[in-house]
Length: 413
View 1: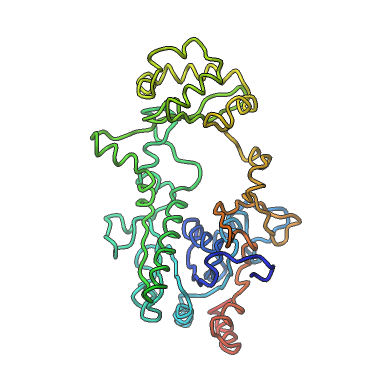
View 2: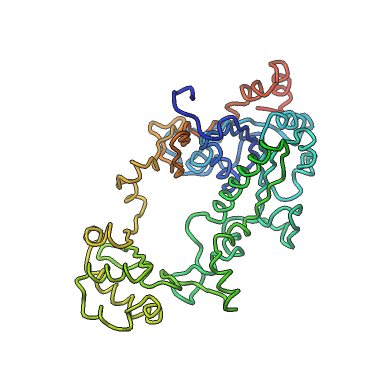
């Protein structure tokens, strides 16, 4: 049990050294922390630069005071902060000592950075053969296959573009590509890396041998676009933007309501008949061109127009009353709708976390993973810069004198 009497997560006891920054790497380590891992965020002197990213609540402590904004607070919850200067030899020696007591090290520098520090996987494995070393880079690590783009910097829109997801997303069929709103070019690779880390740790637990885990951002994005791969393989035609529909199902996508939009997913003829019934069986429902999904796909424009002409006459709430629970249906929510809808509170998806200095809490997205015996979730706010430096070092074998020397040398803060 935790100090607060709550059952710890399933990864309780796992020690993770987190050298990540920006979104992708911290999101990965956040997932491990949410499930109970002890994640030690190792920050450079002055702290992670994303601490300055807003929005900031009124009165919240800024980066200059060791605080953070909403961006940092959301994806660095449940972590400890240790400030360590890896540019100093003593800083690198300190990391080597920390590695001896760790299960995982995760970083998302460009390829070669850790090697230039003398801290590449092979060196760290000498200190701890059981270590799982996880790397997340735009185009992967050369150990797993050296990409021609290995030296390119990569952020979310680059991964979305080159991983294929942007090319099949857009408001109109055959139109211009569109970036997906959330940073899926970062978050999807983060999820795959957390999965890889968990798998590698299970192997290490059984064999005593760690390994190098490598995820390329563009590879992860392509993996979630699996449909475009087999479509091109089978047809030699490259899929393009599909608008708000589906290439193989109809009706399937967004439709207008009188006060916004709703989403319908009609994956088979049974749901089509049910939808038609809820619509009052209009005259066109008996059109032979609409009899099967294959025919509806062939006559997509007519089907979608007929359905839209009906949905646009009703509010989202009215449509929910007619279709909800019967036909795959959902109103399109914005953030205000999500905050107002009881589902997300009941499911623990809107979590209030302390924002140092602010008079009120910051609401962040909770963990969607529900586990009956080891629930995990958000246990405490993101750390102040270097908040846990002394206690973390002490826990991992440094005595008070050693910590004092490192602090006097500016190696730790």
